[in-house]
Image (cartoon, rainbow, N blue to C red; front, side, top):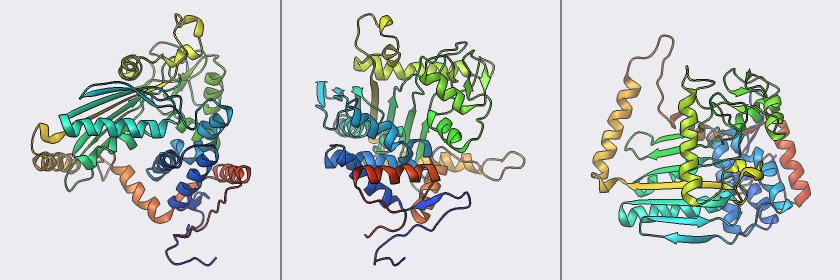
Length: 385
C-alpha cells in the first residue's frame, strides 16, 4: 500500500496476532462515530481522545473496545444524552457542584477537572463534584490534566455495582477508581490510576474475549466463593444473581480485602454523597432507595497548586530524588527493575505511538461493523496526515 507524505502506517499484526492500528486513525474514527450519534464536535473529540489514551497506556479494557457497548448503544437508546444540559448548580472560589445532564462522561469530566485546575490556579486548591454523569473512561486522564499547571491532580468516580463488600456475596459497590498525578522534574510524573477492586471490569472482559481464566482472588461466584471464570462473573452480575469482583486485597481480611472495601466506600462518599447524587445500587433496587431518584455515575475532582506549599522547582527536585531512590533500591531475587506508578504506562504509550495500538480480531471486527452502520470510513492501515 502506498502512503502519502506524513502518513503513519500500522506495522501489521504483532506476535499475538493483534492488528496494530495508528492511534490517530482510532482517534479520528471514534470522533466521527460520536458525531454521527449527535455529539458535538468538541465533545466527540474529547471522548475519542480519552478512549485512545487508555489504549495507548495499555489499559485495553477501557479503550476503543468499549466504543459500542458503553457509549454508542447507550446514545442510540436514549440512555445517554448526546448534547446534555450541563449545569453548575453551586459554586464558591474553591468548590463547584455540576449536574452532567446524563451526557457522555468524558467531556463532562474534562470540563469539571479544568474548573478544578482553574480554581487551584486562583486560590491554591479546587474541588469539583459531578452528579448525573456517565462512564468517563480512565480516571488517570483527568488527574494528569493538572500536571501542566504545576498542580497535583486527583480524580475519583463511582461506577455501576460490580464489587462485593468484605464477607458479602452481592455486588453493591463499584470498582470506584482513584487516580493521582504528581509533577516531577527529570523523572516521569507519578501517576497512580487504580480501581479499588482487585481488578477492573475491563480486565474480566479482556479475559472473557480471549477465553482465558482470571487469577484466583479477583472475583467471587454467586455464593461469595472465589472463581476463575470471567464469563460466569460477568453474567452473574448483569443478571443480579450474586457474586462479583472482590475488593482490592481479595476476599476476607487476611490479605487486606477490608482495606479495598473501605477505599471503595470512601470514593462513593466523596463522589456520590457530596454531589447529591444517588448510589448506583438504587438503580437495581429502587424499593430500597427511600424515594430518592435512581442511581447515576458521580465524580470527584481535585487540584492542588504545588507552589502554595513550596516552590515548584524544589518540589520537582524532591520528587525526582524520591523516585530515583525507590528505583535504585535493592531488587528482590530474580528481579532487575523496580517501577513507580505510571512508569510502565508511559513506556507503553511511547511504544504504541511508534508501532500502533494492538487490537484483537473481535475488536477490529466490531469497529468495522460500526463503520458500516454509520457509513464512516475505517481502515486498519494508514491515515493521511
